[in-house]
Length: 136
Ligand code: 5GP
Ligand code: ZN
Image 1 (cartoon, rainbow, N blue to C red):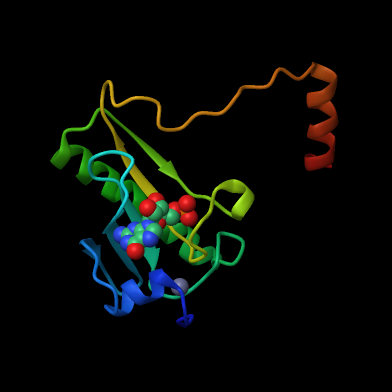
Image 2 (image 1 turned 45 degrees about the horizontal axis):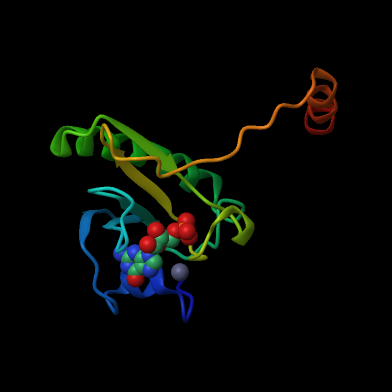
């Protein structure tokens, strides 16, 4: 399952070079070409799925297990102080490559704020309204 004009499908097939740090039958993990920090990597499924909505459940569970394994290894090898595991779905959420991927971002003391959002301050009533919409 490969999609024409998908940059990550081309990386997986070897058509476009990448720096691979891990590979198995289902996944490839490459270094991000424009890293947020030293060692920023991307987990790519070898089959094309646009996002987490499309990723089969079994692959979703495989990917989080792999993220944990790599995070532990990278923390040891890179001696980082923390880690962000991030996954964007849809343009509005910051997704720019529409082949599912999970960011593995090692964090270092004083590496600056690479991820930031403005915290809201909803009332208890507003939170309850949202809870009802989602949970009921
Ligand atoms: P997104 O914004 O979709 O969550 O993340 C896409 C990521 O892919 C970005 O961090 C970007 O730097 C990375 N990226 C885009 N094109 C390439 C490429 O050709 N090679 C590699 N290694 N990373 C890429
Ligand atoms: Zn693809």
